[in-house]
Length: 189
Image (cartoon, rainbow, N blue to C red; front, side):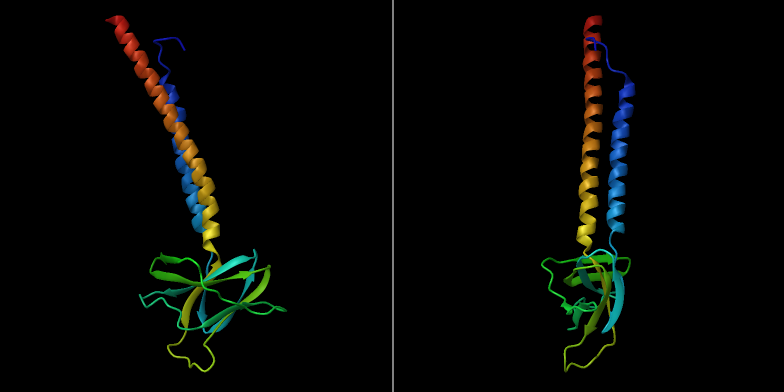
């Protein structure tokens, strides 16, 4: 480009498209990560059968609708499938909490379900302990952190690259137009 000739203002359009693309990719990544969380509600003590499509770590949370304490009332929770010994719930290393609408939940443990198929979650009171207070509300499903992490990392990375390119394009065009305007002003004066 010759000295004193500014780039066309049309270069602002690709800069805008890159920034808008970053916003779209970031929004899609967020939407995909939120939709990856798939919990099933269950009332325990008792049991419930469910299908596992993808093996891995499954998380169990206790839920509350009316701000009751979110602590496991001593239920022994385990997962089982035909032909294998039951898998007891293990304490979680981190703290998982969530609020969706009026429902609040706290993660109480996890278990690794090693293969697809039909599984059963069972919650029972320890031997000798009597049932009081009725049923408790729980939610369980694949580890939500794994499902949330990858769309955010990949989509967020792409969005950062796109917004960086868009801002850099806009800044470069602005700087070159400003420089050309100064040269033109100096030549006139």
